[in-house]
Length: 195
Image 1 (spheres, one colour):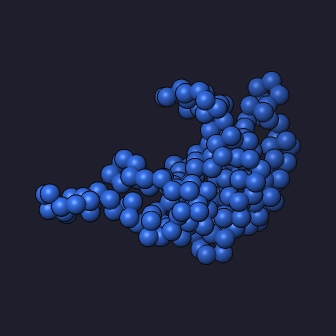
Image 2 (image 1 turned 45 degrees about the horizontal axis):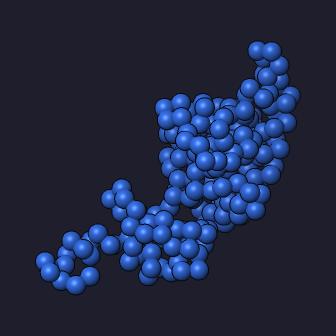
Image 3 (image 1 turned 180 degrees about the horizontal axis):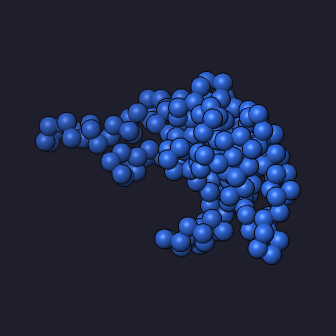
């Protein structure tokens, strides 16, 4: 990140360097389901909200309310348990956590999995806004229309290795699918067949 290797195995140092991650399994890997919107939003920035050893609750509430408003989280209050929110609003809370952290690079793994069409549109708007603000975004998605609609550059992988890269101007469904199936095509060709 910024031309320097990230310290592997040190999540706190990686986060301080400016990396954020919204994982694919938000309920299992990102959210404290029985905690509030406030707690889930502020957890990544508690050091900024502390005075001596104590979290300034007013500052924490203000931060959570700001990001809940900015991302249009539909919740009765910031004290509402995250588990009671819809999937789209849960995802917005995960994004709020990292936006509060002001990352240089935000990795979004399947950012719209399990959310309804209206919430997808809102997540896409948030992603576009972040890109305009200068946040680097790495979106991992198995939904081809999502990739084509969001990406400036597409890197296609199969079996854990890169099979190709496309700029937005060259990215079509056919081009992406051809790269995605490159290994399958190679394996099914008879020996000596032309590529």
